Image 1 (cartoon, helix red, strand yellow):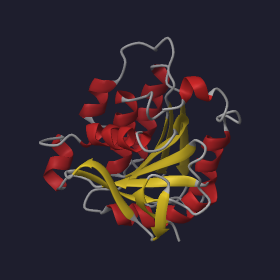
Image 2 (cartoon, rainbow, N blue to C red):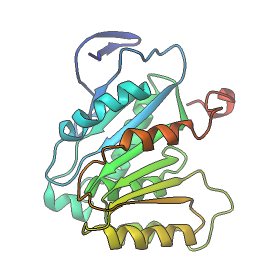
Image 3 (spheres, rainbow, N blue to C red):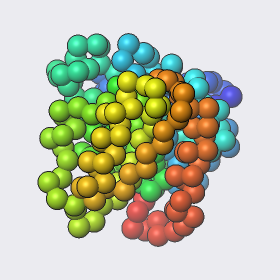
Length: 233
């Protein structure tokens, strides 16, 4: 059972609580019992798919948050039509604002932050990472799609230095296979480290070994707690 956030360093037994800088930008928050705020924390922000709810992505990832000792943040999304045209609310900006809001309450190291999304949330995850690579240096897109919005965010040439690392997950028999494969090639050509994971038969579902993928990302930098003076927010 996690914590219900009621104040700085104070919690009550509760599965989820709400967090957000304003009423139209709220997210479910899950804090594992093992997480203490006397040191920088890991963040796992999870974006749900179209016609889904934050709880639908939070519930399957909650045991992973426990295993990773990471705070889980699941933002709410736009309605069907607004989700495709990115208006009147731009959720990508909201995700950045949510993380900024959380970092005003607790210490966060950007290197220890993963933005993971499923389906439409996977598309949003890559777009948000391109817009805010300093906040979201690790992006995981599960069965996402390549969008015109994403094309407009790509750097024209390989950047001199980028923190962004992208993991694209798809299935060889899924409708996202070609878009994800093409996106991997495009991102790599722009100098963005990209890992493409293809499952032989998995179709539009959260991979059974997702925890392994997330753990590998968190552990790729064994010194994520070093250099806090420069990196902590």
